[in-house]
Image (cartoon, rainbow over the protein chains, first blue to last red):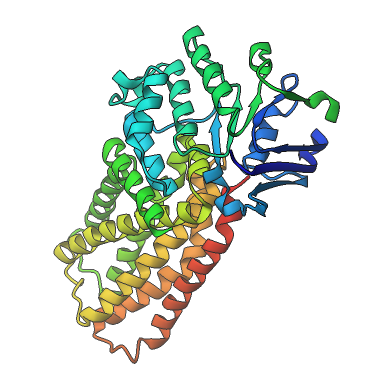
Length: 209
Length: 221
């Protein structure tokens, strides 16, 4: 079990003069599945990007702590696993090459057994040597889950996790979310009722306007 | 950090071999630019000063046509976010810089070889000075081009913005390198070229320091 925690302090975001959300406060620790919901344009993706350290908030602070110590932004990427429809993997490489490259750039060991396990779970094992550009959108989405899980991060952020997935793909995702949620923090940003049913706590962004 | 940066460079290198994003445009530009110069001078013999100037003009415009690819290709393919999720800003900049450094050295080596074969007055008297100028000039060019590429990658009119932004930043480097190349043609000693060499070394140090300090702000929205 991890000693990881994410704390948000009066988080606000504006794009130009347009307020996306303001004064969001939450504290998520150790493990669990947490949801973020709200209508289109309410800032779900913006909030998860802020939590992942990809964009800066206009005001407020997001603090990631591991075993009590604050994680510096330079090192944050290795503690985060991220899945979203707007994430793009390298299409000129195969799935296997992509995952190997990611491990090397992250500076973590490429665990081929673990990757093979996930490839089997996500039904991509027999296509692992095909170029990603030959994949369907659903297969690409499944590969993104392996990309997020392969380095065993303490936080998994899933922005619209089931988009482009068929029923079989959704079942695998829900199974993984339930299993991983017992060991780490999972954040799901979605409007899908089934996705949010997995969450123990849901942040409704329309309340923060 | 070095191993991660090298892994990123290798990714870019293999990606380049498969997509030919930069190599083709660079090769075509070198051939076209040198051909145009040769056709325009015809049977005339151009002096050392003009040869040195035209040598760096070709280098500058070739760099403009290919070096922006380091970041622009990531932005165009939508993989910038992926890169942000797997590497720290320092790793990303270092990896891209290694790729551009190797590209610049290879590209400029080809240009230098073509010039020495095709231009009568491209005769180097002080070879050590020429090599040092070539080495320092390429480092400055690669660092400046990489950070400018990172700045313009998110902009709309990348093609126009890149040379426009690069021109004032690279002008002191290009002018000094032209002078140093001319010195190497004349056989000027290192002592006499000390001032120009100090300018290029200073330029490189400032660009490397400023780039690493700025990149974090450029890389994240």
